[in-house]
Image (cartoon, rainbow, N blue to C red; front, side, top):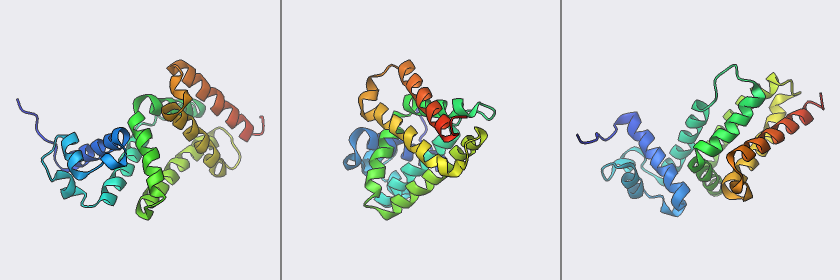
Length: 192
């Protein structure tokens, strides 16, 4: 039985997934509409039908990663500190392509205002969710605290995919994340 090519929203997700993988594995120079069609197993011209411009393709990558970030949140009711650790370690373990693509796209956004807008909006949404967790942990002014916490978590993730942190075993990485998040939250709470 021949595999049916996805249609509609599924096809758009397949296009974004393929584009993210290409950015992660080939860099931005390897991202073309034709390469995305091939990577996604779609007929030629499919990507350009849905996303006419390179900016539209790059923005679709950002939107798809944000959707996966939100969908990948552990269930409600989880201890907020454990949730922050699980988000960080889970992203590093399960979606390294997303991380590499996110860093590539973030640098590209310094030259593309439309992409910068998409990345900034996604970052605001994630920081709002993080502020809610920090509020549950009794961190004063959780909205202001969300930025340094997100920056620290992002630094841990960057080191995991592009630095010496890539040499850590998964348990050692998780322990380092837990120690870092716990210490930062305790410091933000004023040592309570």
